[in-house]
Length: 103
Image (spheres, helix red, strand yellow):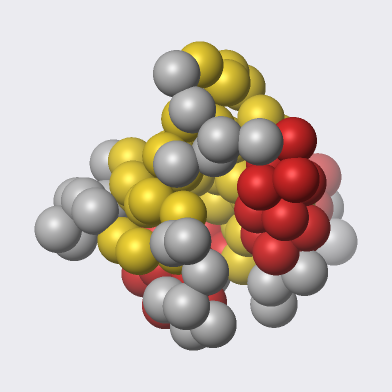
């Protein structure tokens, strides 16, 4: 392979990897105790395709996160709808997924 071919191949691999692993903004309200905080993080980290869960801000009982997962916003939203722990609040807006912790 020539150097141009190698660069083109590397670019294609990089683009393929970037489209399958995305970082999404997620907020979860109703976090009222250290136990509920830990419960939500544990739940998120065990979801299929989850690569990284980072809390960016915690204020006024709401956890703001950056989540890197395989498959994008639709796949993540689908995974979080299972299990009944979280209730979706954002009405399908994928710029920031918004949830509330169910009691």
